[in-house]
Length: 311
Image 1 (cartoon, rainbow, N blue to C red):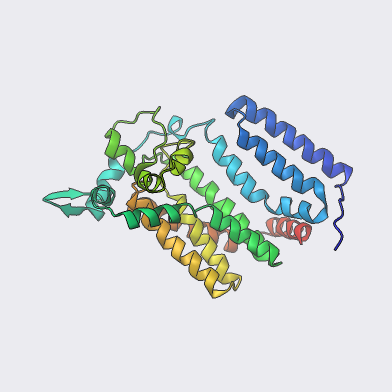
Image 2 (tube, one colour; image 1 turned 180 degrees about the vertical axis):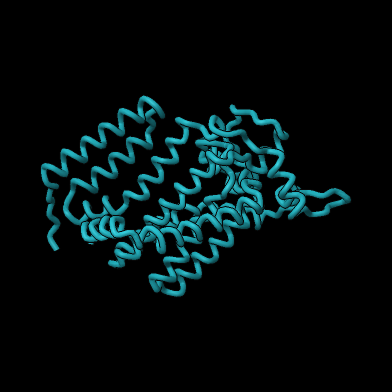
């Protein structure tokens, strides 16, 4: 098949360029323009302006773009400026429910694994945690390329909706991760940088600061409850089953789902309570979207117009 460049309509071009200009200005003023912003804009424009098929793909990926932008913009209004940070309460609750006796001392699971860990578990933990974004996005691309556009769009929208629910709760209940309580105590220090925590053991194994470079860019340290890392693969698994994906794909998603849940606690990035809340957040997101939003006539019309554009 011969490749053909086809540009969007003048109206689509004007709207898209205008949005990109406004986004760039606002980002530069309020967040600070970084190389990844340039990469994001370049990637989207390359897809959108190349031809009709890549343009559909660019528009289909918008929920994932909006997710990334929304997370980045949390830097502008930190959640701890809205409500007080809970450090001690969540720690004590974790210890009272899931505490593990160790040499006469009751430890939270994260503290236990900080003492009792193994190189094989450290390596697997790193592999699992590298998959919390690539696997959902890769699965979405798989659905798109397999022409399962209805399932793809439902998945992408639920992914975005669940993130927005989680972000909203970050503002309702700012909470410190376990590594913070373990390293800094119970007094909130607002200037605390991101921390690689137990994932540093993976970096040491591969002799490269991979996770250190990722978590050093953390937009907000005090946004641990719920664990959205724990939500993503729940959503992915639901739509993998709904879309009747091959058994090997479902198996890999399931493996990474349990692996990410365990890693979140093993590396002290989340309490068990955070993980359970993340799972519940995903289930609520799926339920509200499928049995709430999709039942509303105006939203169903929007969904169908969106779907018709990317088919």
